Image (cartoon, rainbow, N blue to C red; front, side):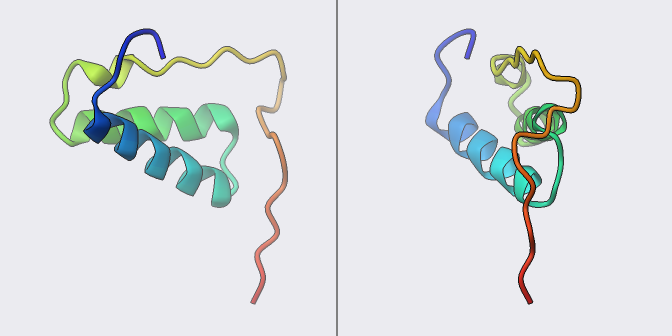
Length: 68
């Protein structure tokens, strides 16, 4: 985080980011989805607080296998 973040924004961030990772998104795409969700919740300032610096090309941190 670049700055402090409210509890509501942090909850939205965590839920959306981890949901996206579980759906197979790259880490970069998951953070982007989470930032969009914070903005969509009506928070027009804190959406820019989460940042991500990566040194990997794919952004995939692990592969998720879905069980039936």
